[in-house]
Image 1: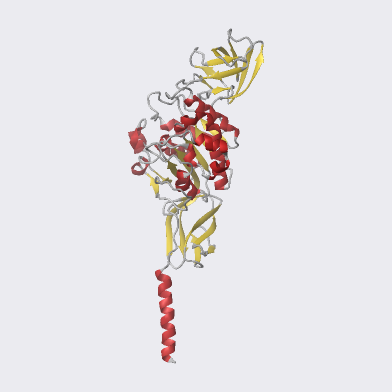
Image 2: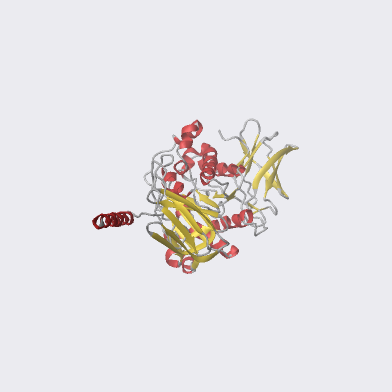
Length: 461
């Protein structure tokens, strides 16, 4: 009998040893020390474990204990109710092993994505880089850069590490995202988490779920016009799968986006492509998140490809909770990577502060075409965000066309938030366009000094 009892105890001990040896509660890399979680929200936290492994989660901001259990697929998920902005806090996750996350802040989290102008760092060269780097001591701004990866299938995890913002870390982080986050931090006085997931030289198609292209023939045809490049994947879905899909269960405030240069290859389809990208991300995040984007700057592209992309971006504003940063006055005609990243970031921040946080009441958007009507052989064009319109030169960047759709240079007169446009060569005007060229820099601004976006009322064929 004693031998039998010893045998039982030995088995139990062995089983306990086996269970502890295979203890494998793990979490995605973005749940780590120094992270920021979205404030006053029901935040998902998840990971992997043994099947049926009991898991408890406790936080230093609450006395509640959250429980979860590993599924037969070795996955688990729980929801944490976060308080108002603050910290630092700790989060403890216990299964057969224990994980403790330290120096966690609660605040506002933004995804910052796109291609090289979003990826561009202060160390790569920006205006007044030395001063900006030296002043980047903001421990309550946290930075997470997603490492470049691609995948044929959607992934659950990605590589990266949360870091406190300092001169040492800021200089290798997205400069646009940093200036955006710094302004939010200073104005809102809350911790800011910035997730930079960008890849220079990438097409929009590779940032979208591949499944969309299987059900949308127009999108599929557009994607077939792009060519392989040496510096990034080009197939639909490859970057999305590895660098966006793993983030989609996170609770975030919104997205800022700077991309479009590569899609000059299929510029006439970019309105459809970009609109579907935004819709697909919102579906994946299961929330109509604000999506603010930068219009690409003037540069010497082929034919009208650059301005066609800019107009496609302008027309994408028809989607709700979108807004656009116009950059035609802060670009560089000789460099596709303008070094003025600060003003781009600040303009993004102004959009968020007014449209998402409702903390300011000033004009934050560029003058945008609204409508046009014919009056006495002239076109009277109305604009939104157009208080205090003024021109910096007498040179007209307007053109008008009649039914033949042949455009002629036109004169203009500013009348409040409207502009009268006319040409002796067009007796019956039907169409109007402004700054319609790849390298034309806007010369009309509103009262806060934001440039008018290029536009055309003609259907781009």
